[in-house]
Image (cartoon, rainbow, N blue to C red; front, side, top):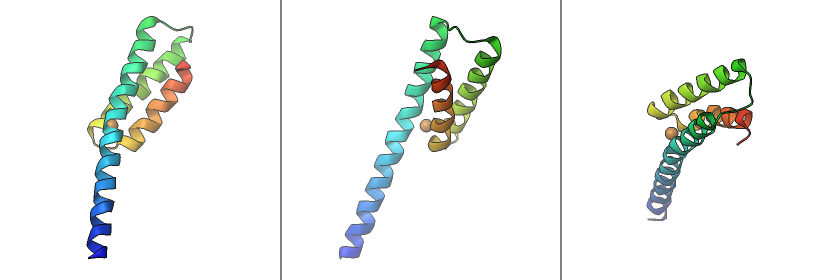
Amino acid sequence: MMKKIAVLAALVAIAWATTALANECPMDMKEIDEALSKGTKLSAADLAEIKKWRAQGEELHNAGKHKESMEILDKAKDMLGI
Ligand SMILES: [Cu+2]
């Protein structure tokens, strides 16, 4: 009985974490897009890098790899200073 509850609790925790992460990436992407559309003082090379990460982040997110996606989107956000 206890074992079943533990398994259930673990499943709920995983589902919750997955949902939380799944929502996080689009939010990060939105923030990056907003920062880019506002314009930045970054060099063209830096902007190209940020756009590359932004695209990779979206691909990873769509592939369900939210952790990897957020890591790469965080790099883009760091560079943008957001
Ligand atoms: Cu995601």
